[in-house]
Image (cartoon, rainbow over all chains, first blue to last red; front, side, top):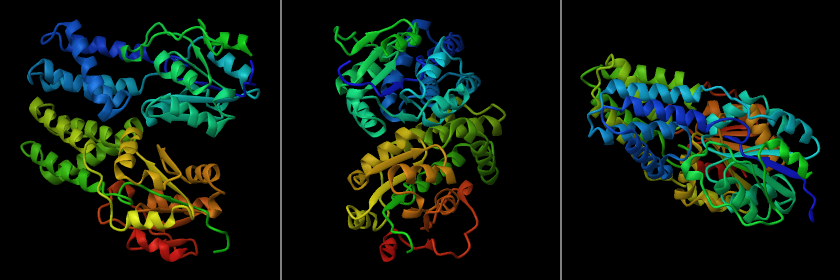
Length: 229
Length: 229
């Protein structure tokens, strides 16, 4: 490594702990609730369209997702969805906000090995309140020097944060399960980008894998990061 | 002033721009929508109870408020609220997220006078995404060195932020319309606390005025801060 690595940042959802599985379970429930009004595949399409459209109003996170489900329920039923179904959608959203934080394999050990040797950070987008809750419940909080919850992950986000918390992007590494939000913008900022795919990834996070390059790595599990350092 | 003042931080909602008025307008609309089910004063009470109860699930902000209104509509109607009313509540919430950012008098001039002479910051709680939108739309963004959006404003919040962005609380001042969230915890952290009341303040933000002390000031308008420096 031509520059010394001093800072390692991790995405949170589906990098440190499971997350997308709760969205998918809730969507499954949502499809059953709306079965009288809409064929499941079509419902999924309409919900994704609503989520996409609403990102610029709601941002990321469970509360916005809940509101998008309610909106979609109105849409696909031409306003005929009974309020009892809306209530169940609300309850499903609330359950997501109370879902346990289930760490991915090897995460705690890896962080324990790295802590003290590197400056460790979480850089995650989403709902401020819910992400803070998950960091707290994860039991991992003490490993991290910094937790940054941002509204969008762009190249400039990584440049700014790695300058503020560390020695700049050239000395920093970003580890995450989203090529689009974690790996590519971090590489573009001049940092290392480490891709640890998760079997479930939200459709809006898909992107082309970057070309082979010194600062890009793909690993099967988070623990493999230790092989780099 | 025994310590030099180097950093001045401002609350955002109802300190820099109007905010509570949109909540109150929406609540008025909500009362009319639910008029068949609930007497207005009782509805207000139930909504406040729901907001209070949901703070630990939703945090602050419009999306959580919208979900609390929907929940209250179910409660007061024993589940009989028609889905068309829920749809109108949703729309009211969405309108709030698109509401214009209407600056309070003297704000822009005051910030212009202070900029460059002090490190200026926004410290606000609420929804990350919506607060960032308001900072951007306010046109005030360039005056601020730092914008910190936090989930809760406690003494430790001010200690941490004033250490990170400035020269510590002793050299910092917090200006805001909430005694509970802006002034008292900042004073407790050792900073100056400047109270600029707004005629509308959310019931959950009320607190006793602090006793007279060197570091506490109360002003009628934000521009009066200039008299201090």
